[in-house]
Length: 338
Ligand code: KG4
Ligand code: ZN
Image (cartoon, rainbow, N blue to C red; front, side):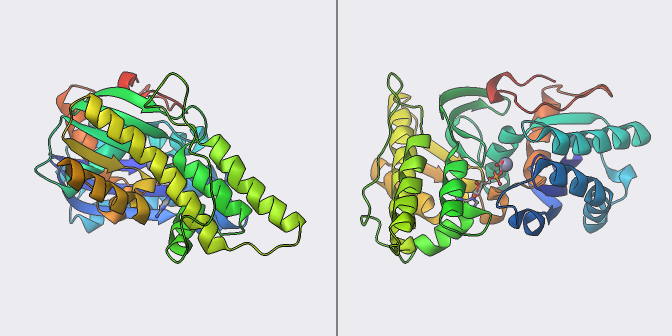
């Protein structure tokens, strides 16, 4: 089954053709990073307009790259939630139009389910169940993937997402957008114990995260130094900050893996590209005898191939939308409705 998938939930206009949920026949990603850089973050209105400009070309390129025509396809899939509402609507409306004009079934895909599916593309033998740490710009979840379309949220952030927390501190340090990536690059040369930062815990829930206090602590260090006219060692602060964020992610995941007697762990989402998180989880997995699944770097960030992969399993479950499909800014991964 060949699925044409479309993703436009944030600042990447993407389209891909994926076969049977596992094989990427094409994957095109048009990023808007340069346009948002001068604002230090994604400007939703600009994102929507740029998706409109890019989408037909990106979709046409994905079909062409796969060496196919529309008549060779079996379905159209699209990210319908969560994300920036204006951005999502561009992809959803384009997919609806395509589905109506070609007669192909329309498959709605939850963005975070798509991130988890990036592991099915990297590891064609991987099947549920497994635990997944989903860490993106907008979400930080520990999810038990019981089946391809059955999820249980074990823990989640009570405030900022891990990616957001990295992006905000990077911005305060004057690093270009997207902050998390640039923070990762310069942290490599820093001393991760140079700054002592809090490792916040959530009262009453050992699996939930809270990153806003940690973010504020880092921003306060940066502002205090600037008010005193002191030079801050950016490499050291980035390394210490990244250590604190990844310590929190790893320790809660470790507790969940232990308590649920789980031996297989996957990472997913933009922050799963982080070098510190990947190496720390690799050591922890080795020590605990877990099998660890790390998505290929090019599949960690937003792309449509992961949407095409998850769509295959949604289709098998009968999750097919009508032409009244809407987009939603928020939607829980475990109770995704359309
Ligand atoms: O999954 P994603 O591409 O978009 C959302 O669904 O939000 O995640 C984007 C997030 C941003 O916060 C970005 O800074 C972060 O992923 N990110 C990284 C790295 N690459 C992307 N954070 C840390 N280290 C990286 N190498
Ligand atoms: Zn994402």
